[in-house]
Every structure is written in C-alpha cells, then in structure tokens.
Length: 493
Ligand code: BES
Ligand code: ZN
Ligand code: ZN
Image 1 (cartoon, helix red, strand yellow):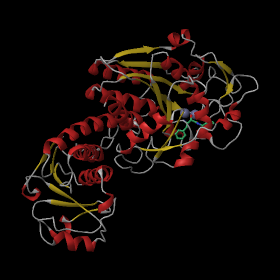
Image 2: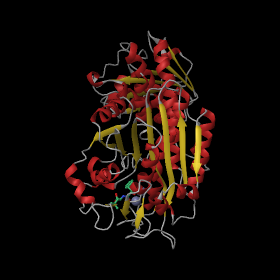
Image 3: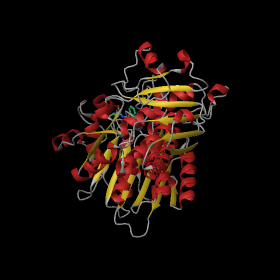
Image 4: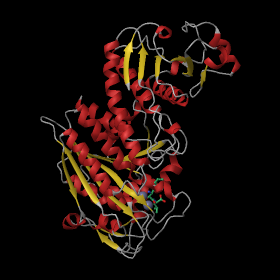
C-alpha cells in the first residue's frame, strides 16, 4: 500500500472513499460535505463512541464517494491508541466494501513534535493492520481482496514528522502482521522446521547471524527438559538462535519465545474441544521473530540474542510420561507431574541457553497458562519478573504500542507450591489457584538472581476469539511484537 501525509481538502482528493473521525460531541463542522452526515448519524444512532462507524453514502448519495464516519470517543481521552483503533476499524470497514483508495481526515491539527511522531505511527499501523485478513487457505475470490492500495492522511502542519512516525508504523505493522500470520498458520504447515526456514529468511534479509540446532546438538548441550517435550513428536524439534550485535551497543537483551507449534498436552492430553487453538502455542516465538524482523529494519543500537525452542507436544510411544524426572541444561532436575505444563520445560532450557550469551537482561514471551487468561481475560498479557525497573520499562513500552499488559506478582511465599519430593522442582503447582504466578515462579528458578528478567504470559491475546483492535476473530494477534520493539527503541535512546 502507498500512503502519504498531505494537506488540503479530502473531498477534492481523488480517492474512492473519505474517512472522517468524529468525537462524542458530534461536532460535524469540519466536514465540508453538507448536512447529510449529520442527519445520517441521527438516523443510525451514531454516538461517536469508540468502535462505532457508519457509511453515509448509502442514504444520502454523496456523489461518487463512500463517506465513512468513525467514532473517536471522548475528545479529552483522544491519543495515539484511540487513533490506532479508529484507523484500524476504518480500514476494516473499507475492506468490507472492497474499496481500494481512501483519504483519512482525523483531528490531528494540534499534534506536534514527539506527539505527531506517535500519531503518525499509530495511524499507519492501524490502517495497515486493520485492513488485513488471513486468506492463505481460502479459494473464493471474495476472500482475496488486496485491500487499500492508496491512502492519504490529511494533516496541516508538521507533515515530515507525521511521515517519520508513519515509516516506523509501517515497519511495526509489517512485523506484527508477520507474527500474526505465523500464529494463524496451522501446525501441519508451520512445523518447527518451517519456523527455522522463516527465521533463516529474516536473518538473511537483516544480516543477523543464526544457528539452528537439531535434537542431537541440543542433547550435547544437555537440554533434557526441552528434548523430553519433543520426544513424542514426528516433526523434529529445532532450536533457533539469532544474534543481532550492532557496534557500540551498550545493552544486550536475551529474548526468548515459547515455540510449541502444537500443544496437544502430550500424555496428559487436553480435552478435544478447542484443542485446535493450540496451534497458537508458538505465539511467543512468533512475537520474537516478528520483533527481529522489525529490528532488522529499524536497527537500534542495542544487541539482541533471540532464542526459540521449537517443538510439538504430542502423545506417542516415545513421548515423555507423567512422573518422569528430567535433567535440564542448568543441571536442575524437574519432576514432570503433567506433560501439558510443557512450555516451562522448553523455556527452562531456552532461558539457561540465552543467559550464556552475555546478556544484560532477559525477556520471555509465552502462551504459558490458561490461568493467566482466567485472571486477565482475552486482551491482557500478564507481566511478571524479578526487577521492577525492567518491568516498568516494559510497561512503558507497551503503553503506546497497541499491546495491553498488566503486572502480576511473583510471591516468594508461593515458591513452596512447586516443590517436588523427588526432584529439584515440580512442573506443576500443588494448588490449583494462581497458576500464572506459579508458572512464573517455575521460570524464575532458571534465572540468575542478579539478572533482570521479565516474563510475559500472552496466552490470552495470542489468538483472537473475537475481532481485536487491529486483528480478526480466529487469527493470531501479533501480541508482544510492538512492546518488544518499543522497549528496544527506548533502550537505544
Ligand atoms: N499452552 C498451554 C497454555 C494456554 C492455555 C495457552 C490457553 C493458550 C490458551 C500450556 O502449555 C498449558 O497447557 N498449561 C496448562 C498448565 C497446567 C497443566 C499446570 C494450563 O494452563 O492448563
Ligand atoms: Zn500445555
Ligand atoms: Zn503449551
């Protein structure tokens, strides 16, 4: 899609549609078109609230243009996040009418400097992501609309700053979409090996170094926990390690993504209803790879060691059993009380591995627990860790990003719940409650006490059960990509 920021009157521009943002005060005075939309809004009970939109074209026939009015909520609450939502909703509605070009008129005249940068970014992100739909496996032509090919954003003043923000937004949207599509792609197609192929492509286009370890190489490194999970699967595991080491970087992040291309539960098998959603159990690794794609373009002066322990979790004659005791790469032994708590086993070895890469902090993203979804619902990811300063930086990075994060505690008192009577630690807690926290505490056992570490449980937002801000029902969301990238951009200063 071609996009640009431009000044002038949108209704004179040569676009098939015009999009107007309107606040809840329903001030239509900036619409130069005539009284049509005002009466029209009354007719459809449009209140200007977030999530509302209507086409005025149908009832009043404004010549040759589709006029789409989008609610922006309360004037006082307006900011880049609301703009992103409105832009995404607009793009989705335009798509519904197979519209290929549009001029967007949002109230951005007051924005300047850093604010304009963020608005430009949010606007381009919203339009690029909101108009996308995953149709790779559908053949009917109504599923194969390419979306907008031209967009103009009407602003007065600081065009160059909006544009600069827009360029970052375009990179972030592309990376988020990439992660989204990986998550949506089913497990028969997106195998650990396929993920390795995708990672190699990104490494190549970005000039990153990459290592892909097979099971034998992982065995040599002593990754007994990760390999136990992989043992029941016909699709071989792939341990992916990408390094980005820019000259002069003063900070290096260890970035780990849970990479279960399918989680059946293993011998502790899951109920069949909804099991198909477990193709999303590699969303952490998708976020990591998506973020690396963006990093390759934005090239901040901070290092990243990205690690993804890719595998399936399957029941089989060769599968690991409940009751097994496995030895992790760290040397710690783990009692496997439930083979469905496999993510933390793969992460234990991935975290040990990444800590050997001279990193200054570690961040992991994982679709780790159903309990986190119970706690926070489908939109919020849970954030935990051992260093409040790092967590604050991550919360800060998420705030303008489109990702929603909420911090959860890691209470020392709950550590007793993951004690094992036969190994160093148990892979499930002895109580039912607080499962997101006990999973976090399990990971903490594999982190050096002096190393700042953050864990983001994205089990809720990874796959959308209903249309999200800028992603669709039944598809991956790309959750985490923008938070990781924002965090790194902020770190680079
Ligand atoms: N991949 C699941 C967690 C999950 C649940 C992700 C819902 C996305 C949506 C994880 O491997 C798992 O099965 N966790 C168990 C842990 C339990 C056995 C301690 C869970 O949450 O039930
Ligand atoms: Zn599981
Ligand atoms: Zn899992």
